[in-house]
Image (cartoon, rainbow, N blue to C red; front, side, top):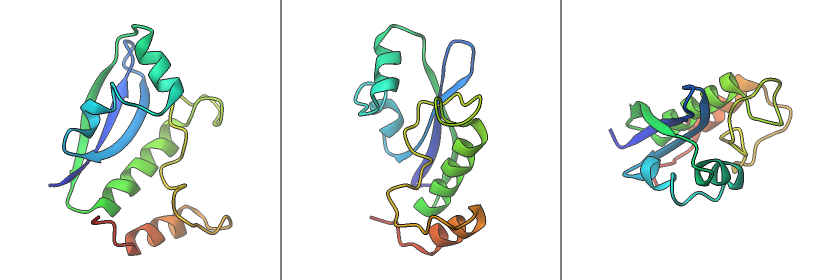
Length: 116
């Protein structure tokens, strides 16, 4: 399986970031993140652990799982009681119709060729 979805946790085992990747993305993101809130948290010396949550053959399936987890945990300062430092919901870099519901978003993602 090429793609995976990973989660970073704080010392209380609370999810603080969800991402998708391949190769060593989960490890590299701990030291080379463009997400300033996550970077500040890590650089503050707070304990952070991570876990690969699932592996996928398709980037589309990984993106959908990432989207589902971000929706489940919520984003800090955006969603009520959100715990994640994620800046996006996992799909903002696609040109989506703002009126689409969650199922329409997932169907669109499934139709894309994300093998790049």
